[in-house]
Image: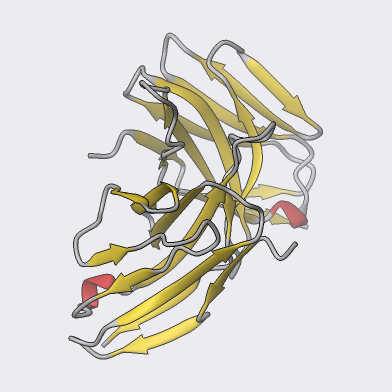
Length: 117
Length: 114
């Protein structure tokens, strides 16, 4: 059962444009929402992350917007560059229980972004 | 630090064969994870470990086994390979320090079962 739904599956943006990727989750017990970036032939790497007590987090050209009541969060890439062309995954982590957090992540399906020069 | 390393990078198996995917990390991380990545499906957790000697099943454990005899190594064993196990496999690790949220991924192993 998919608990994190990501859209769109693919996205084409012109250089300098804004790329927006959306995710929705079902489980209200998630406590950490990271975005991972993956280049072809490489493993995913953490791009930016947010906790549900914050509505927005910005790091350079990358911003996460978080809507707790709607159970949605999104990644915005401002001034998109050809070097941003990659696959992006949103994820969610279950909250700590008992002795600690296992750190297990539930990933979205991924979005392949192409930024045209 | 080499980070998370995986071997082999590529492998072709025949149906029914077995193999072990190797994963090692040199960051002294307690937590380690195995994922498989299929097109349009994201990453699915196969098994994970919270420390040496402790492993547990993830979302899609059937057909796989793991062991964790040391902090550094977390091999994934495929017994009786099936075409449904054709995938890209990623190992990841996570520490318990100030950046404890981040999972560090290896470069992956691309496995084809024919």
